[in-house]
Length: 259
Image 1: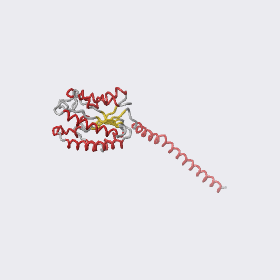
Image 2: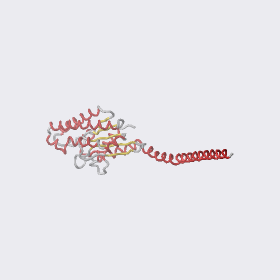
Image 3: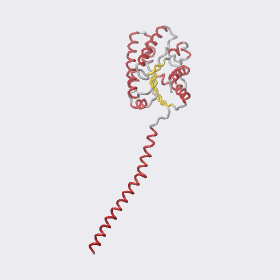
Image 4: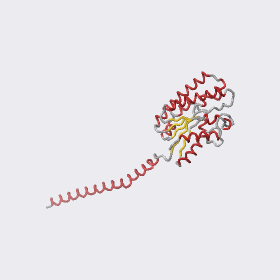
């Protein structure tokens, strides 16, 4: 009888222990899902929301025209373009302007290989470029010398760099529309205007031909905008556009962007 009582006590103890362990396990599991799991979900939620884009993203690359040099307001064609696009689309436009005064095509090629620039390019809906003016004009020296050989060499080097830039952009972003702003001739009212006009037109023609070979890459002509009244649209340095000149460029680009 005593032996039986000991056995029952042992069985009861084991069952009590198992019941206690089950309860402890259930409590820990419930605590995790009610607190820990909820905390993980709450932490993950903002990251998911942050990945969603609000409106359209514009990345602007290039030289002083992208920077807006010559416009007293500092907006340049990019600033006026964003204003017009927001009015036109009623969407928020996020702008990343990486323009650098004095940039040439080789410097732009180096820039688009930088990690922060690439990060913004990947998220862009539209990529806008002004480049080539400094390659050609070289602070006006090329037109002073009128050395056809040097101008041809400069154009070939520029086209090679531009093609590499376009390849890099497309490798980072396969859906964004790329707009390249063509050159105008700031010296069209000076002597030898016929020759300078031919040089700029040839330069633009080759640029346009290169853009035609790229996916969703659009050449934006500006030569005609300045052709008849160039001095009305130039800054006091007689090289960069003034506010009105930039507005003309912005309107031309905006007319080519579809939503």
